[in-house]
Length: 130
Image 1 (cartoon, one colour):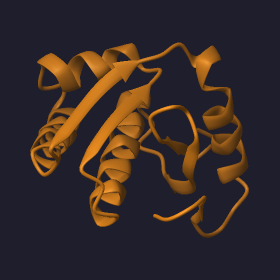
Image 2 (cartoon, one colour):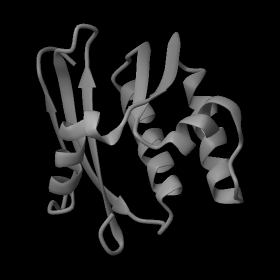
Image 3 (cartoon, rainbow, N blue to C red):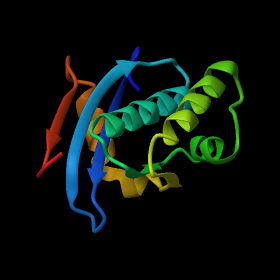
């Protein structure tokens, strides 16, 4: 996050590791990391659904968010609403799971996040068929 903006970097990979898509998004920041991360996850799930993907795994470095998505509701009303939205959206997929990774394993996503802070419009890039 930077000021009132948050950069969102998404790398969609196929099983085996081949990159299928990259998304660079810029959104308004809520000022709370957990809410900004939850908004980003919700956007990613909606984008995957728009593309008619059926099986997805969301990998995120925010340990608290992953725990909330798997087991809980959230520690404040805004976070709880976002978590409920995400949980409802997961039902639209054949399989949707969440996994925690260390931020050091998410170098490409972090690079894209920083780049996203410099753009005015969201960008997406697809490799192969969407």
